[in-house]
Image 1: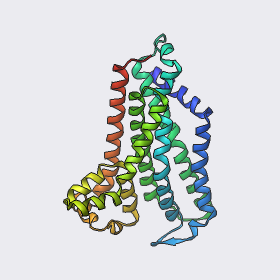
Image 2: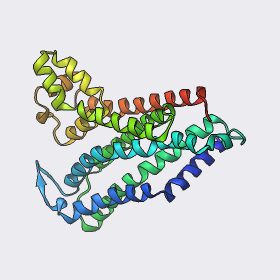
Image 3: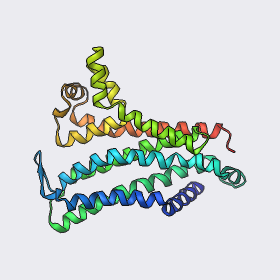
Image 4: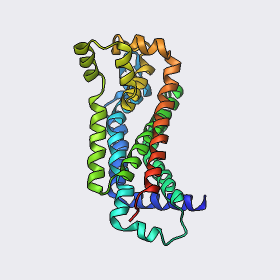
Length: 275
């Protein structure tokens, strides 16, 4: 356990020194600042006003930016250390493979999640100072959703990094994974259903296998509990899960994917040739 925390601390220190972390923090902090500057806390959209409107917009932007940031930066972990010859030094130190691998995951997760949470926390503090009502239920659920999203794509990134033999291959595979998830969102699946006359339950099941689609639908469910914007698909989702059930599913399913991918990444990392 001590080796795990030391490895996590080392990864955090290295990440704080990296340029990508400064850009990463600036992006999410800048997003909140811009949303305040453009007056989203003073607008009303679909009955949502104040900080609720800002959080709705912020979660939508995070779904577009966070996954690719996490994937691209994470896949460099194992593949980059392999290319740099770090494993040769690792084998000469009293640090177990499990402690090193899971320590890097822990450190990277903290580095990924804290700037996102700090941006939301800053928005809440500013709202309290300005006397704007804070929707605590929405804030807590969105925080949990972003935490799960980060964990899900972190696990995917570690799996890709463990399988790839070079940094370039790892980054290319991460980009293709992200692009594939984007392609299998609503519009593509709707076209498949119309052309192939596939059962709606099958199409919706395929859609909900996509973590990005799960996050997007869960975010919509907070301000549109009936999921009217999804059309007929909403009936299948609500009949199967219900509103509360789907919100729980949106947290449990991506968390399970992240854990399975991280576990598979450790399996291939331990069985593969380290040098």
